[in-house]
Amino acid sequence: MAKRKHNKSEAIRQLIASGTTKSAEIIAALAKKKIKVSPALIANVKARGTKGKQRRKKKASTNGHIDVKALLQAKGLIETTGSVDAAKKAVEMLGQLRAG
View (cartoon, rainbow, N blue to C red):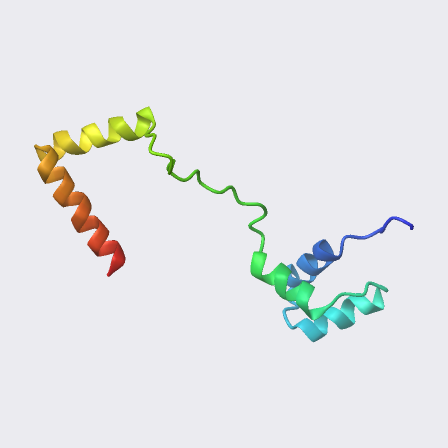
C-alpha cells in the first residue's frame, strides 16, 4: 500500500481558510485535485477548527486522597471565610449555583 502524498484534513483547512465553507464546494474543489473526501470528514474538520489537540485537565482524585495543593487552597478558603463552617456553607452554595 502506497503512502498518501497529501493530508486530506489539511487540504480542507486550507480551503476553509480561503473562504470556501460549503461541503459540496470543498468536495468539488478537492475532486479537481483528485483528493476524495467525505462530508463527514469535512464536518469533523470544521468542528475541530484550528484548536488542535487539547489537553484535558486532571480531575481530582476520587480515591479519597487529597493533594497538598488542594489542601492549601482549602486552608485559604477557611482563612478567607473565617471558619470551617463558613467555608462549608460557601462550598454548598457554590454547588447549588452550579446545579441550578
